[in-house]
Length: 196
Image (tube, rainbow, N blue to C red; front, side, top):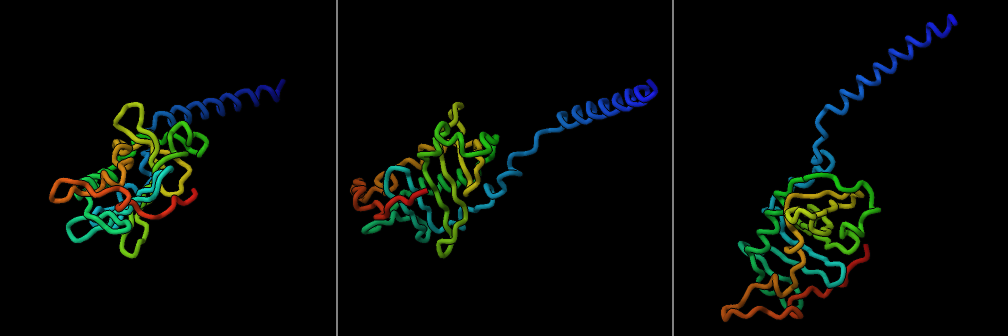
């Protein structure tokens, strides 16, 4: 009986301390998702010299900076829609993380990352500045599911990127002076999609 008189108060103090810690822990604001993905805002569009876009089911599209504009690299390079490339770069540079959606690759199929579009932003000498895999658009229609580099985490970012990266090669090509767009077969990069 004497031992129980010592243990019960000690157990009560321990439970009270545990309850206080739990209340304190869950009253703290959630850690910013950006802390998990620090590289998102680190790319300045002026540093980007080339963009490689590799859809899961088609050939790689490569866009390269040429002074003030962009060109679509293929069998014979053609001018690219500079405003479309700059819009993509600005959207990628200004992405903000809304939330971490998954911590592992187990949800890739439902988030569209198993057949996502791989985007690489390249600097001088093809140095990789940022690599993303872009999945489905979020159910709110203004976010996109993204994996940064080779991280297993999937994040939702506050930009609608799917329509931009799913453009065909001919959609990236600038119209000529007569208003015609160069054929996609001429503009598409003759590179096979790499296995993931």
